[in-house]
Picture (cartoon, one colour):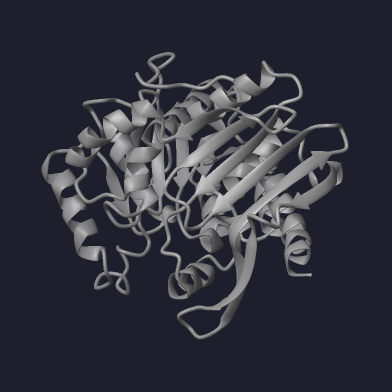
Length: 382
């Protein structure tokens, strides 16, 4: 696979994708806002093939949302952008308010909203003439909904690519390249979060992410397995949970309801075609992702981290540029930029970039997540 690192790639030609961000959210907090911030960054120009044209924010621009937390910050950000003259960005309360594309315009939608809203929003993005849509993971709440979205987009000849940024990350490239040079090696993709290891904090996490760890936190790692390791529901021969590492618990969320999920999970998948890879996730393990390569005897050969040294070195500059922003924005800044640039180049040129997950991969990834969850719960709870 090929990955990109700083400096950011140059545009392949003078054509640019005109971007509509759907679901901007709160400045410094929401992924939609950080997509906008990267597109507006004239100092670094991390996405040279894209230009931000429209922002759709249904919540903060509605009567109900105007007094909600984050609304004042959104209004201030919008006013500052408009006061500075900006790049001619239009703000809208709904997708249908976005004007039709001009002749020859290569319109690209970025949907970064609540997962439950995505099916409707994708349909609306098709209606306003988006040629390409960048859809944040997991895409939809269920496989059936995501399949309907895929089919509707294909019928309209719209390309949908997914926000699985780890698919194009440097740490993944390093992991796979070392494994390829070492016959008989094994790989583990570890994803850490930094929740406090308390029942209260984990119960809140379980309720807020009620779709479960495999459909949320570990969905990136499953997408890697689907993309690069031939993992599909029909091709899985064996699933083996690491019972020493993993725990599955039932905890009360803030509502008082019980939620059952994994707080730590590690498992190996062996496919019918002979490939194997392991996934690990720890909600209280830290704030990085790691690719680990071991030899056939289990001896560790190397580790590759996300964020890598380049991203860590750039963090102080980003912290100064966006004080108070979510730390994970900075850790994954290069990968967000590279993925957006690849999607923008597809919008302009038509070719699906290597490694970028399509909506077909997202459908299979969601199927794998739904298939694995009860199997792994049974192995750990029986």
